Image (tube, rainbow, N blue to C red; front, top):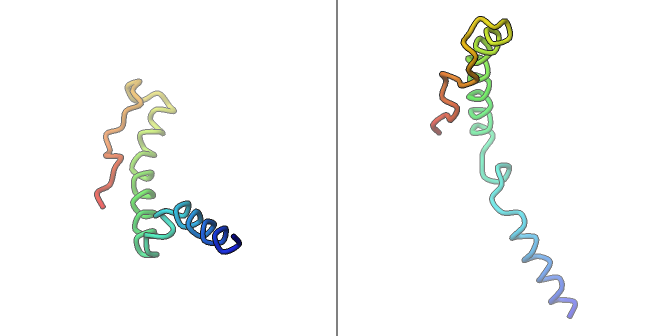
Length: 70
């Protein structure tokens, strides 16, 4: 019975861990993804600044692609 409970706990822990971003992506992939996010935010800051000062049309839609191709 004890072995069955240990085996069941291992199986549940295996299925709960899944393939999360910390387990699949390497350090270089995480750095590249972070650079892509920072580049996107840097491009959008000008739009946000114009919107803050109401120099742009009242649209919150961005001209920039939100999804970077991997």
